[in-house]
Length: 160
Image (cartoon, rainbow, N blue to C red; front, side, top):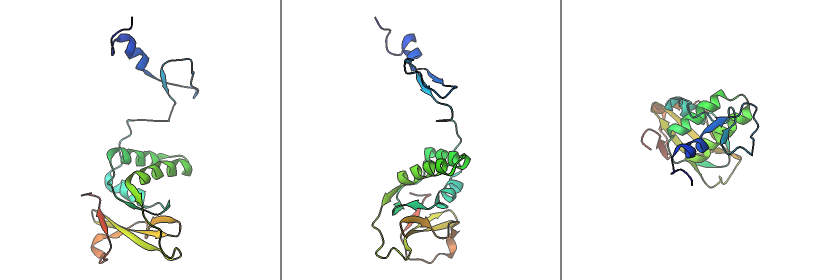
């Protein structure tokens, strides 16, 4: 007869152990977390820094931002800033980008950048453009928000 759910035997089966050699023994019923694959205790990047880091990248496809960054998104961005390879960094940043954006129609003339959105965070603003086959902020470092007099759709990430 099995112990009731949450009993001592059940707790042993749910324990996680960290594999030191990177290999998983499939005969072992315990779940294994490989080293470096997931660290839940990463402190998230401050929101202003996370927005600036995210929008300093160009992303494939035509998309616009529809959701603000969550705490888990900012933790992924922190991991991306620590990434050892460009591929690892872009995988983390691209995952966040796809979670907070949605697709838009491509521009009529792909040779000319088309502004799709103005993203305002605090005193900075980023002009998102559809530029060829990618979406990017032009300029990538943003501009002071008080200098903008543009009749474009805006998204204030503080209130979204």
